Every structure is written in C-alpha cells, then in structure tokens.
Length: 106
Image (cartoon, rainbow, N blue to C red; front, top):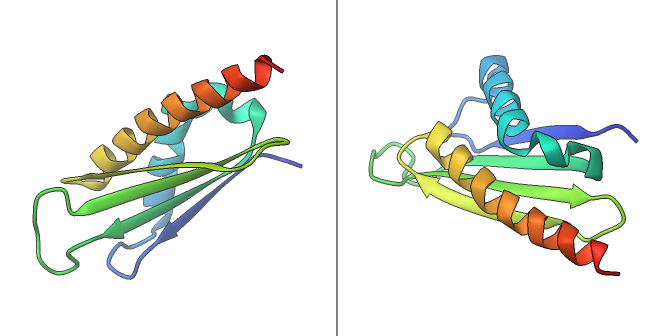
C-alpha cells in the first residue's frame, strides 16, 4: 500500500490545489522522515470563527497511521493555516518519536 496524504477542509477554508501542494510540502519538510513507517496522514483544516477573524482561529488536526499500529493524532490552533500546520507537525513529530521508540522496545 502506498503512502497517502489526505486533505480535508471545513466549508470556511477553500481546499484548492495550491493549498494541497503547500500542505504536502510542509508535511514532507516536517514529517518526511516518518513517511516510510506510515500508510497515511489525514489533515483536517478548519476555521474556528468562520467569518470573524481572531487570534488562534485556524486549526490543523493531523492523524497519522503507522504501519501495524494504532493511529496517532495531534492538533494545533494558530493565527493562520501555515502556523497551525507547523504547530501540529511539531506535536505529531514528538508523538511519533515516542511511539516508534516504544515499538523498538518490543
């Protein structure tokens, strides 16, 4: 099974091809070293305040599916989509490091 990135957006964020390309590039940059161990990453982007602007109103939730293991997830809220993605990637990286280290312990 090939590795897959699936992008999901709410109805306040336009899931354009350029957004998908930016998301894929950011995931590759921040989480690429994990790709061989994963079957898929799901990205959920949402705007928490919809039409109102506000601090930390963009959310990125990531769910990574490790081969032969349960999915792990992390999310981050920030002022724009890029910062939200970066924050979620940092959190997910920490979780994946711990999970992979635990797998090595078996």
